[in-house]
Image (tube, rainbow, N blue to C red):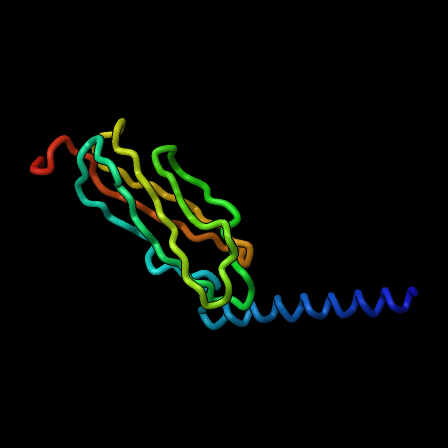
Length: 139
């Protein structure tokens, strides 16, 4: 029984090492395990109180494992991320949406959201920026 437990332990350890080596090989080649099509969106000028101030970012699973977003850290309560909680299979693409509330803030904004996944210790920083104005013709 002890030998069987030892053999199973060695097999599990070896498979984990193989997975770690695959991830390291991808990183060495400059491949991102979760690739966003863009990480910044500039809204330009938006009206104070505007509805539907949203940006959409696409992300792709470049790993060999299922990917899911484990958490998102927002720099401000005025941003609201929306994303699927379902796993993303290798090669699949999904959307990460960010809504911005313009009701209480005037002037230039530059907000960041830090996105963490289950396949990497590296986080992706998503940035939205623009300027909230009272009229669009305002300089």
